[in-house]
Amino acid sequence: MNGSFKSALVTGAASGIGRATAFLLAETGHRVLCSDISKKGAQEVASGICAQGADAIAVKADVSDPAAVDKMVQKIIGWTGRLDVVIANAGIMEEGGLLDVSLEQWNRVMQVNATGAFLTAKATLPHLIDTKGSLVFTASTVGLSGMKGVAAYSASKGAIVALTRQLAADFASDSVRINAVAPGAVRTPLSESQFRARARDDSHFEELLEAVIQRYPLSRWGTTKDIARTIAFLASEQSSWITGQIIPIDGGLLEIR
Ligand SMILES: NC(=O)c1ccc[n+]([C@@H]2O[C@H](COP(=O)([O-])OP(=O)(O)OC[C@H]3O[C@@H](n4cnc5c(N)ncnc54)[C@H](O)[C@@H]3O)[C@@H](O)[C@H]2O)c1
Figure 1 (tube, rainbow, N blue to C red):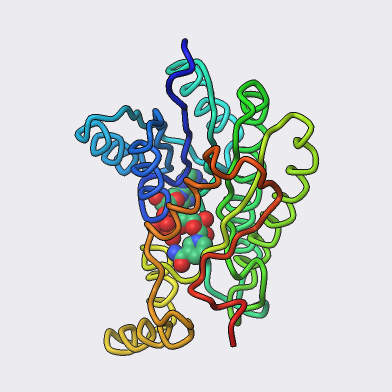
Figure 2 (cartoon, helix red, strand yellow):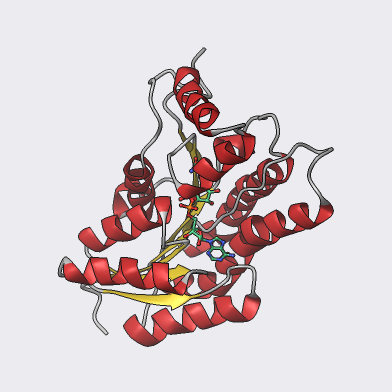
């Protein structure tokens, strides 16, 4: 296998930020394994990429299942013989502050978001060492600052923030770079379900969506492309001296008052 292409694996690739990232990595010359718990969704994204003349395949994998994660990695190594870029992006959201969230919800969010990130990193790092590759996690602004009513989710994203710094320290001597993006509010099925859960009815749902915009200095929702562009930058040689960073992409939310 020659080194004229790069090989990328994206988890949570069927929708939202992962989908946009899979397309962007394909546009920038990567062969992309689109992985998701939704087989159909992953296949649709891979087919869309192939229809644009790039290379992609799909795999169904639940990131909280170690055997499925190992199979996912075998699939891309079997296909391209190498792994240069890993985007550990799959995630779920459960509404609820500490007194509302059940142990079951807490465990599920931690299993997918935190353990899923851990398992993806553990299975892929040996291959990233071979290529001196790049791993990018999807954290969140709520992993860096408090937000009312999302206890399990924010704890899971805080775990990703700490894991990013820890792994960056552990693998810097192997020339593997490990960073995270911390998106603010982006219109995707995940964020819409959060506001659906809070809304009394359709018009309240629209009001809640509108109210988000008021909180952001740049006065708009983030787009999946806003996030994908920074992920692709962190995956590329253009960020060759950046590791251990958590980069907020948040329309100024965390730093501007
Ligand atoms: N949308 C936002 O406002 C926002 C903000 C900050 C961080 N994030 C993070 O961005 C990431 C992507 O979210 P999104 O907004 O694009 O949501 P999304 O719901 O559009 O996409 C998430 C994808 O992850 C997949 N997924 C869910 N559970 C999985 C599992 N166990 N194994 C494999 N795949 C699974 C889903 O099928 C879906 O395709 C998540 O980690 C999320 O926490 C989103």
